[in-house]
Image 1 (cartoon, rainbow, N blue to C red):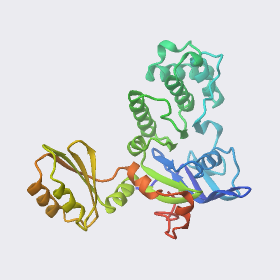
Image 2 (image 1 turned 90 degrees about the vertical axis):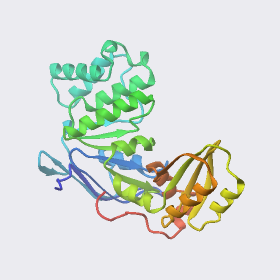
Image 3 (image 1 turned 180 degrees about the vertical axis):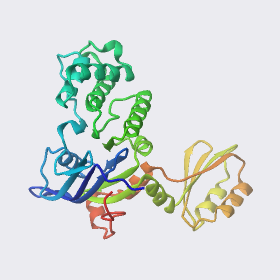
Image 4 (image 1 turned 180 degrees about the horizontal axis):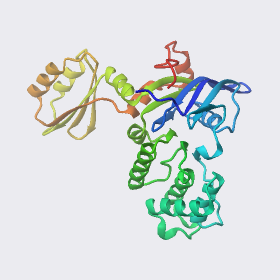
Length: 330
């Protein structure tokens, strides 16, 4: 069942002198949903986030907010959380006071904000460092404090700009858990990040920008389907070196894109969508001693690279329509 979006942006456009930063962006975020805003440097992501946060005014387009079931042109101040890409912590204040202060700025009472700050620091494994100043913390722990400051007041909508920056793998997992917990409570999130393997796990929908234009808008499942339509890959681990003739025969097949070495005695065989997998497996089995074989579809990272491959000028001049663009709010 469809739910009304918390925020719905329609036809956002923004130009900075000769640079078209956004060219008709549609974006919608429902309660409990993570929408990932992706794209290369200069694609328009920062402009889009600043417009959503009310820091920049668009040249065209509208944004509708539905706070508490009421449609309005601007959200209440206590309704939004923001984790910026750049550090925004008070250097001289203990972290618990810093987090509580951000709660007070969003309308919480003093005691409520303090208790919420303490709960967040406990959840983030920083309770014992609550009285330390941010400069005494590592970059990763500072990022954890920033997340607490963004979400301490329980916002209905949050913007997380590069939330995984500076985090080790264990804390990346923690952030994924916290994002899931936050959306389970009904918060809608726009997330912008370059860690695509983490984005693939966190997001429900994707909006991929290139030079201000949407080149893909849809669910993560739709992106996987599009990647699958482009072909799959067989991953092989061999028990012994392969005869050169086997590789040559594979590369000569019309349904094989390429055969690549991943490591000693390990191959990747990239297939076209219409590949005769049974025939390829029979050919491999006749010529190779195989320890392991597995099939995989391209990851979000590979889909993204394929979608945005080449120089920006070449991408804009190839005459191909953007994938999933302008097909309704993303």
